[in-house]
Length: 470
Image 1 (cartoon, rainbow, N blue to C red):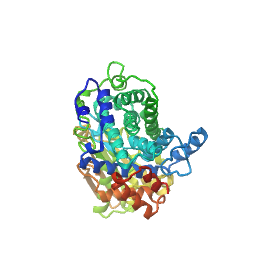
Image 2: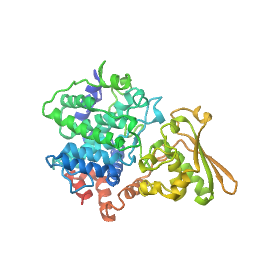
Image 3: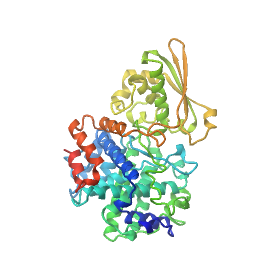
Image 4: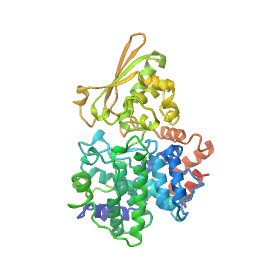
């Protein structure tokens, strides 16, 4: 891999050379541990996502589409699909609850200091392709996954932040390059063929933020996973694309991002790995990470002052527009709207002290208790918080109790789950257990977790899906 780390003539060539040449032995121990954490998290949220309505629709769609049955999708043992379709299912499930991890940005002016949801597209692709070849080992799966995440994160870092600010959904767009790189590494494409696969990804990378709050948002990640596999398999057969499709006047960075700064990442693929530096944020809650500090603050207020839901007269969240604009629903009527509704997110914490799989359901959102509590929660723009910087995920919560007492608390910008305040391995396993409750037995859950922690010892990566799908 040494040559792949040397700065080359184009971003496409460098990304392709890195993915094609990465070996398991090149991955530092710290990065391997983080990769296993991300695989645990990614597989958990995929399994949780299979219970969402979008996956019921996808099941009907895929059964009608027909395919050569070579791959099992995660969490649906009765369905046999093509590798591309299995990647679509895995990616859709992985983002269906918006519970998947988030890339931490290095460069300035990135919204919230974050970029993509990096794990699901390359993991979805790698799991689907592992199904087609029993000789793919656990080490192969990890290496392909790490290659895909690294390519995805470095491209996300290089593209102009306007890409997201003007309405592209980076997990759907840049995620396509991550899944293509993982797929190319999985099937053994060389650097030139991997560059061709990235060229195909550039023409298929799509997803707009207008679909946030609908099934279209997780579909972006389903398509990014599927399209990466499709592009790699086409390149394997000799299909040609532009081998420098990230670069130049008509390249992806210019077309979809009004340019970028490839020099920020050139010569730095794997040096350091983005999984380790600046790292990833693993979500404690199944909604956008920019809401998490406020939810944790609400939880702390309730606990510290021994408040019950009956004590709450009103709640006001003060924040900048970097939080208030994306979280745009005043009152949530569905679970999907709830992910973008601060009134719901804080109400879930107030009513149950948590916000996990059980709370992110239409039944809970629509319950009389939740609807009534949402009416008591307001948001307000705070110019002082705005002056602290667009990249800061900061808020202040003011609670007025029915006894007339006013309580205030600022959020901590070292949000829980981020690199500065990470979930422990035990907390990560706890999240996985919540994700798979009602899906896997306790014994299955323990076996899956143990298998991922020791994934590099598995002779066939298919063994992991054997455990997951029973």
